[in-house]
Length: 346
Ligand SMILES: Cc1cc2nc3c(=O)[nH]c(=O)nc-3n(C[C@H](O)[C@H](O)[C@H](O)COP(=O)(O)OP(=O)(O)OC[C@H]3O[C@@H](n4cnc5c(N)ncnc54)[C@H](O)[C@@H]3O)c2cc1C
Image (spheres, rainbow, N blue to C red):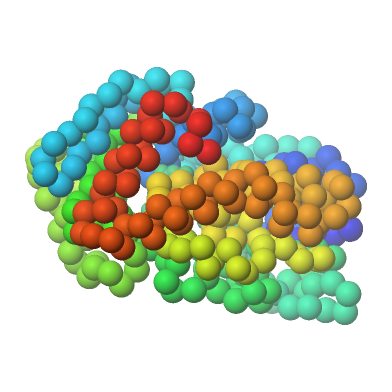
């Protein structure tokens, strides 16, 4: 069958790579991949342990040896980090390596065009692009991120209450440590993730909870505290899907001739915001479902493999409505556990 994958981020590229040696014809649509997506670029032990084939790709990475957890009362916990467990990457470099790998055997066709519409056409789909072309496909995959066009067509957009706003900078001169800063009056956190030649420093919280200007001010204050010399470079802001409660999982992520992966499916850890590992995982499970000849089984596969982790995080998040400061407490607890036993939190 002909499979149209919309989006060549981690989810779309990984699926294309896995299907490249199948009997399916693969069209991979993306007008801008690879690109420097606004992101921390943090690859946790989930990626290292579960996707060694991705970690083996030749992209540059930085592996800091320290992590610092800073709290609103000024206290901080510093710990050494096993460099083999964490890597921080540029999204453009990761994207380039993943795309080259997906295209390597010549079976995947990269259509470098923006998709403008995905509609049912007879027993399949027509995929229209900004340059006026139309492509027909039997199966369509939405790997097109948080504002997925495919998702809008099949189940509707990610509801606003499940969106978070992230703002930040790419900075030179930030500390060579992974830093997390929490607040007692913010459901979210600030991060500083050092890469080889700069750091991604940003903050995220529920969309609409805090004016964006205040988020920028918190990042500025943090930079003034930890690295006065830091040269601010490109500013970025972006949305990410965060299921603040379990109702996001009421929508299906697969039907007989469609599926949603990664951010388009909302598959981001609701507490940590980690999404790259889950984008890869979702792609792996859809490839497995397609190989079985039962694409809809992807729905039960993702729920069985990591759905319980998301539900547990949703339960913890609902407990944060107790009190101001509860989010901060829960975040530190979860991070401390994750640092004690890397890879077990997934
Ligand atoms: C500020 C920020 C920081 C983050 N930090 C981290 C982190 O440190 N670690 C982590 O694991 N996760 C992090 N995340 C989450 C992570 O970025 C995502 O979960 C991950 O990129 C999801 O991968 P994806 O392939 O599903 O989507 P994306 O990476 O968003 O890729 C979607 C692709 O679809 C393409 N596309 C979109 N629309 C169209 C269209 N109409 N036509 C054609 N192509 C289209 C885009 O060009 C893009 O290449 C962060 C997110 C944000 C916003």
